[in-house]
Amino acid sequence: MALGIFDSGIGGLTVFKSIATRFPKLDMIYFGDTARVPYGNKSPETIVRYTLECTKHLVDNYKIDALVLACNTASSHALKTLHDEFHIPVLGVIDAGVKNAVDVSSNRKVAVIATHATIKSKSYNKVFQLMNADIDIVSLPCPLFVPLVEEALIDGDMVETIVRETLKPIKNIGIDTIILGCTHYPVLKSVIAKVIPNVNIVDSTTYIVTDVLDLNINLEESGVRKILITDESHAFNSLKNILVGDIDVEVIKL
Image (cartoon, rainbow, N blue to C red; front, side, top):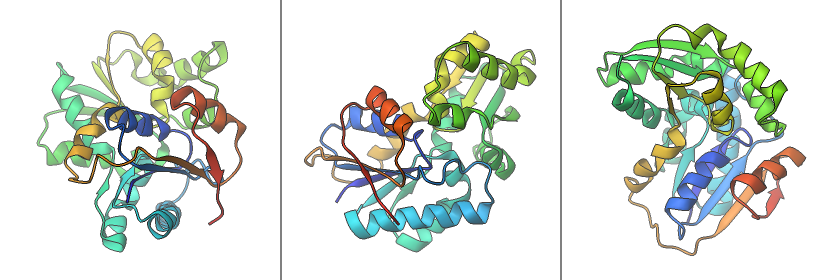
């Protein structure tokens, strides 16, 4: 048995790293759908179908006893469907980000940056409402950030220019907190902090470990680490080495 971690591509490795560091003996299987990334510009129906296919592979072949949807887009659209279909605990990454934003925001004005699909789903707004949080939410899609990360373009003048221009609408509107509403975005955290300094930057990958503790799964196993992808990706391997080190990557076909 193991904990499955799923993302549309490379971004979920930030979640994988956080959980692996906190629970070194936990068996973990990562699945990145690199053949079909990005998910953020696809329809809800397609997002659900892709997520179901990848989760089925993890359940059928690795007998995972819980799943972390390390993808905000999949968390926004497929969470309930996965619960109903596979009858295992499934964690999304949205709740963790919202809880932390509520804790750290002083002026109660928060920006959510994410993919088009996540923004359109209003998933963050719904969680804020469920928490009865008195927060003024500003949402901004950042569709170029995922392709940057998927190509391992994470610093330099070009990247800074793209980040600066993308975030211009939220720079001078009084926000004190930014939620990184996509697990690819923490890779760009230092650039985002440079472009919009003196704000809290909430990265749900840091806080998901608390939710993993609540799953009541066996955290003392063999420390097995596997990474699966659906297509060859030189950039994936480069960033994988930076984020989680020398773990073998297997290309699988669904």
